[in-house]
Image (cartoon, rainbow, N blue to C red):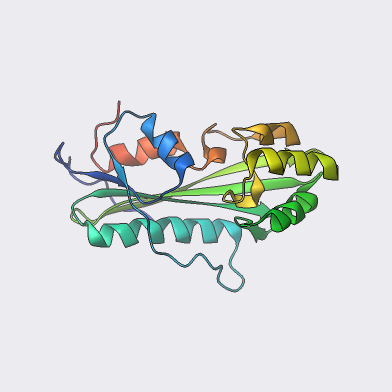
Amino acid sequence: MSSPAAPLLPATRPLILGSTSRYRHELLSRLGLAFRAECPEVDETPAPGETPEALARRLALAKALDVAQRHPGAVVIGSDQVADLHGEPLGKPGSHERAVQQLRRMSGQTVVFQTALAVVCLDTGFQQVDLAAVRVVFRRLQDDEIERYLRAEQPYDCAGSAKSEGLGIALLDRIDNDDPTALVGLPLIRTCRLLRAAGLVVP
């Protein structure tokens, strides 16, 4: 879903990250842009038969639009990540027990982390969605490795219990992607591209 690039926006137009994820906040901070974060109110329940890719795209746009409704003059970023295990979406585990179950299932498997990005400005009618798919091959994991990782990182707010920027990298055999920040939760290469298309000046 996309629209033609909007006219150049005033430099004072605010930028809002529609997420309270500390991982996305840290990533966006790397661009040196002034922004603030706001929590979107979006039901993340998958629709019946919805693919992980479609779910990630829908939620990223829904999050951006939810925040944009309250700030129509702002450029709003929404993002969502869904772990795709052979077509089945794996979300945030939310608990130690569910994280153990997820990692046992992903042991020795190839998982695609579908990281979607949406940028919206209601005043200009700008709306674009993009997606970065990251293929990750997990090692065959022993239960004691899973326990050590979970106790150290507590990645219960991460899709598929994966926290690659920490000890989680030791669980992997391989990562295939075109944007090294996508697995963490916000694909910065695509973010820069969409923000420029929205009219913002990005260093």
